[in-house]
Image (cartoon, rainbow, N blue to C red; front, side, top):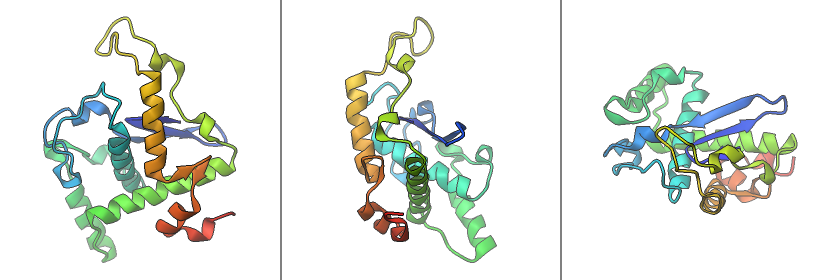
Length: 186
């Protein structure tokens, strides 16, 4: 399932795999300058969340590919520590990882996740949010602020386009672009 801000994919056995960041982490200016996030992000806005979601999903997925606890990382703010993480990767492997490299690694991970999920029966019809997200809460910080279904559907299509997904998974073009061309049609 894809929720702009947090996404999760259900595996064939029903376990959820979560990525992304909580919207409140991006409420301050200069949340993550290295990634180009220099303006506060309104957690209630739906428009524009596809770009932010994709960016932070790729970052979190890079972290997961290191088999590193996400609680040792800081994806935004003054404690953002990915330059140090990249230095550690370089020290351990001899390979220097750039910002673009780490985001590309995350994008490849997401393409593989979606490709596997689609081959296990997940479809584009499974993308979305539970009904309760489209209903107003009676109290709390999000009271009276349901996610507009039409705006969400439009942003979800934008997200799918940014990911290079058509139908149920990544396009052949996107797989080639990510260096995964050997998985086309399999």
